[in-house]
Length: 505
Image (tube, rainbow, N blue to C red; front, side):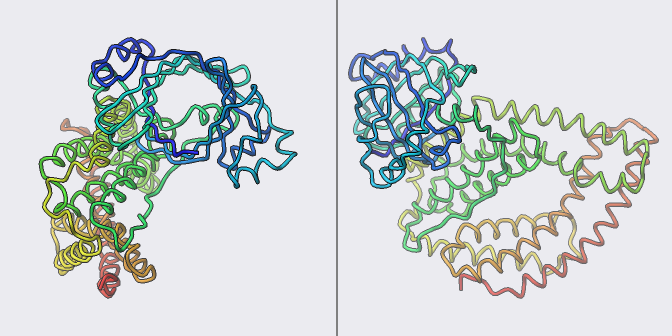
């Protein structure tokens, strides 16, 4: 039994020759590469009982022999796959249950009905070339797989790289991937061959993933806490990527944008831990993809939330209908830009760079590396709470730009509170965060009104147009009414929040 840690990357078949000759591979290779044919047969019941149990059972023909692998469901993040694996030599192409020795697996496979129902459900046929690589104390097996996946009569090509950690630090996997990506287009692969095979029998539609609150240890140091929080943000980001690329729910873009904002907020929270030079370039790139998503998100809000109630009151108004048409056209263009960005080498390079930076702890030129997480939590929460209370003294009478700064202060406090909530009694932290979220929501409505005015000017342009001008006047009145209504509710939400006792004291 072992904990399998590997990084999967998609590569175009035409680029395989470039991989074989890549200097980073040649410099680290400790023996001649080996090429062989692999036929892997995946077993399950017709109703996919093993899949439902988080288990895969594979029998593989390789180098004239048969090998059985049982894998337990694990995690996949930034292309890095971690899961438990049990592998044994067996006599033939049929599963050998006597080789399964883990107590939990023995119990599962002791069910005779399950054994009798097992049958081959899909297979992969690939030509695999393997290189054994050594980097100081780190050892990696690089595998290039070219072939196909066969499920019933369906076939799909396989062209991917697997970097498996044999010994050492997982950060080396990302470093090697980055070295390869400098010369070869590579994209992160977050699903395994088994998941691709199962998808032919039980397709998984894109889903929305909300942020998870990290479960921090009160005795943890700041380094461990930062890494845990940052990986949760990356998981949140990538969890919604499939929806943005292949789905239709506008919440996907919103959640990806929230994930990026939370990640950038984590950088700010742990600023004393992180070296400025090592984090500046990453923050610039995170800002780039956040801006790309932001353009699409602003149009989503306008089309799905802001415009419908106005159209309901001014049905068939020519200017409003033309505005909707212009907004829909602009959104199509914005989403094309989002998808191009998420498919780009720049984005995948950002994820690899971020992962390498985290795993290798490349912020170590910081000055506050020995702090405990509880000390940082108390200091940052107190500071941000004080800042927000100062902002909130005159909310009703603020200029919109000042109110925007208050919204940012509320957001910073909320993200920090959510990052550190697990360090404190849940009842107190949940009530505080809930009241803070209500303030943030009210401020967000007022911000949406300001964004709407800017967006309308962009959609309408500068050329005089009577029907579009009428639409602008309608929105001006509508927004003014909404602003007054929201200000009243915001004042109420603020007083409820201000009455909350800080949960970290």
